[in-house]
Amino acid sequence: MEPKELYRCITSFLPKAIWVLFLFHGNLIFSQDQSFVVPDSLQHLGYKELYSSYVKTWPDTLVSKIYLNTYLKKAVLDNDPIKKAKAYCLLSYYAVEESKKIELLDRSIALSAGLGDKVYPIEAYSFKGGYYLKKGNIAAALDNYLKILPIAEQVDNQEYLYITRHNIARIKTEIGKHDEALPLFKENFIHNSSKPKINTTRYLKSSIKLGESYRYNNKLDSASIINHKALQKLEGSEYHYNRFYGKIMINEGITLFYKKNYIQAQDTITQGIRQLDKQNDENKNVYILGEFHLGKLARIQNNYKKATYHFLTVDSIFEKEHKAPLEVREGYEFLLKFAKNNNNKEDQLKYINKLIVFDSITNSEASFISSRLFKDFDTPILLQEKEKLINELKGTNKNLNVLVLSLGIITLIITIFLYRQYQKKKTYREKFEQLIASENTKETQTPSASPLDIGVTEEIISEILDKLKSFEEKQLFLKKNISVTSLAKDIKTNTKYLSKVINHYKQKNFANYINDLRIQYAVEKLKTDKTLKHYTIQSIAEEMGFNTAESFSSAFKKTTGIKTTYFLKKLNDLNTD
Image (cartoon, rainbow, N blue to C red):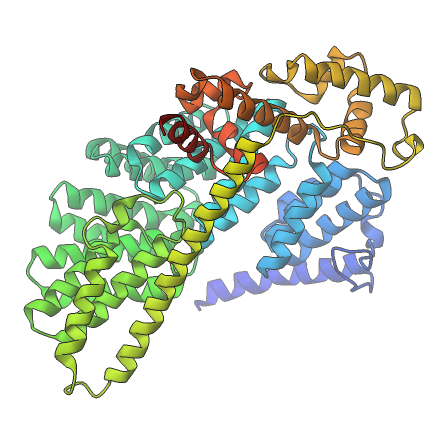
């Protein structure tokens, strides 16, 4: 470390250390639960002051957690569910273990669900989705993002609608649907760049994704324009330079590669990789893509040794992270072909195994990941080649038993995967048959406790339940944009009483109550209305009061246990038999 840097570290650390000792006043107890004791110096602070202090110190884990735990303690004493939800959500950022992080986020969601708040549980769902997306669990990420959309629409949280559509575009990119992702990225970039006060981090994140999407859609000049704008935005900010410079340079280098400017592409990608923080989870994909395209550049130069080095670097990252962009599959195909050309059967077998593992991992989200993953080298062909190579290697390969064992394990994994798919289809079929056989009988809820338990008089409860019955019978739940506020106004009560009655007597929150009514109605209507079942999912969703096909499909799956597309297909099959 340079002397100036050492001096700066020491001088910045000492005041902080002294401040923390003063803050504690000897009290070193710390946790998110009741054992945390608020330091004397923070006793007098209100919510706004505590949150403002947290925002100023958030990179400092120790100090920021003190503010957040004080905020939480105050919220617990005040019995404020939204402020508790906020504290748990923000504390999840600092949780190291996945189980603890998810537990905190789930607490936040449970506390704020159905209360009609503008931010919570939306932000907690967004944090969960972002965490799962970084981990490569696309299904879980998408599940959380889809839960945000109907809630954000109900409370008119436009900012999170933009953020969530941007995140869904990231998932579309993950599965190769680049043409569908581009307009969503454009929308978010325009939103972030047109604000009176631009948030630099959000601007850079949206511009980087838009630049990538332009490249994937072969709009290379547009990609370069966006990349250069992002680089200009880094000027004067060391924090943003350190965080984003390497990523932007790699993206621009890859764009130059597709412009066939190979020399500049290699220099730019190499510079980007050198500056990239490779330990940061959010940089793993772009790091892999950088190494992959350096391998492709070496291949163009007929430098197969160097190409092999870069493709093996990609493989080493993939083996550690268990996730990678779909296009890097081409690197394994090169390694396999190179082994074939050199008549190296052991390497052929090794790379076939790696291809199978790559396909099985990247296809773990089998319900919606594109068949593109198997486009050039599907599993049956790979298994046939494996058998042939094993026979040729018999008697000459000392490690044959190890190879056979590994092949057996891989085959077992594939068999288990296929069995699970079979079981899933069987479960879907059984649920479909139950839906077809069932009749739409309205639920009659009986009180599970006395009216005093929910703090509402018996007379008001009876009146609300009667009006809810009329609301259901008249199918008023099909109206769009119903919220707890609008329904309370229609039946001339307040939102607090309405929420309590629905939670207590319907045994579900308001959003689930409305969605379940709509889905039950949709199932019966689709069973009897020959015209409706030929509508698009978007049209059916609108008929049932949903704003988007995504929110309808998510609610349908949650209520019935099967997908909308599956139900419609099986319904049509019944009518054509």
